[in-house]
Length: 169
Image (cartoon, rainbow, N blue to C red; front, side):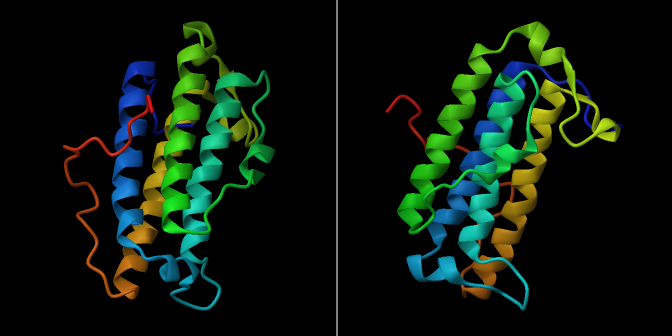
């Protein structure tokens, strides 16, 4: 598959955390009542958009820890009942991914896997990095949901200059 080039673990950890901070900025702008918002027929609720991001955390952990990564890991439940619960889940998911990433060897990081089938053969690092794109996709949708809720979202890729999550606490 063309697109994502080989990535290093340190860069992944920095980019994953930055992506999560951007997402947390958006989620903090919602009110609890906005979590049931569906902008159109057939669209997901706001909380389902957040859940998609969280479920990709669990998939990344499978990519980093399991001998054979499983797309079934996308089915994990997370608490998205309130904005605070969403933010807590986003923080905990980031912590879990960081921990799994710190435990992977360089050899395993470079090992090719194909959890979506042979046409998606990527290294574990590339597959993990793909989930940053997945989060960006859902964060873009959250920007639309914020506008529908009557709010003005922060810039999608505004510089991250604050500590959104204390990963040690």
